[in-house]
Image (cartoon, rainbow, N blue to C red; front, top):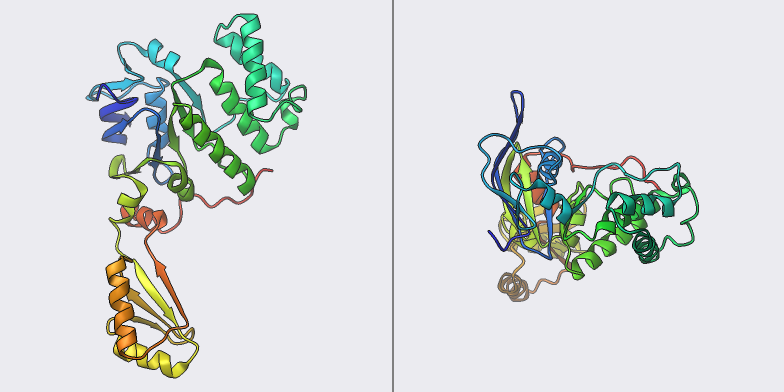
Length: 320
């Protein structure tokens, strides 16, 4: 536990009669991306607020250490070790990007010359030099998010909490943000990421926890979580109706799509299973026009573990 960037045991939180976190354990190694997934209202933001000292843990919670510091006994040391980028931008639109950075440097009590140097370096790193003298209200959604994270880095945090950092961004801006996160981790920063984009967790996270009804439903790497869910299959598609009929008769236990002339065969997608299937097709003299392998993805994991019937986030619009 002492080697973890974040270690929380038996974390509880309730608001009145509503239990938000019901005894969850979170352990995040340093220099990694940890992603917390879950439906709306599952408690993701509450977990971030507790771990970043914004709200106190509930009675009965076990030991919580962030950046090596006891969260309850030494919250000030925890605050010095972390940075937080919330769901809603902390950027002040009435002042320029550079002024936002310098304000953050003042809040961190950096000497004036050092604050200007750090601000200039971060503005360049996040490709904001040309916009630095313009009011932040004129920035695009992606630029505001980059400025938001640049402001978070002024204090040189060891650990950064990113609470849904790409919600509302267009795909290009989202991919830019992903690269920023990868670069942070390469530099040794630990990232605690909550997101409603399952693809985002799959792309970035070293480990993922799925939070549902205040409890951790499952935890592991993306590949480990995918193996928890059945539903892998091989799809064979034919252009010749006769070959399709022969294959459907020969291969028992398949799901048929007569309109598309396609068969769906349950499979884990392993090399051994594929070789066995191809051998059966060769022995029967059957040749499919198309063979594709489908394995469960994080969408399947999310649906199976949370009982949800829709994806956690379906953006109605993007901010360019």
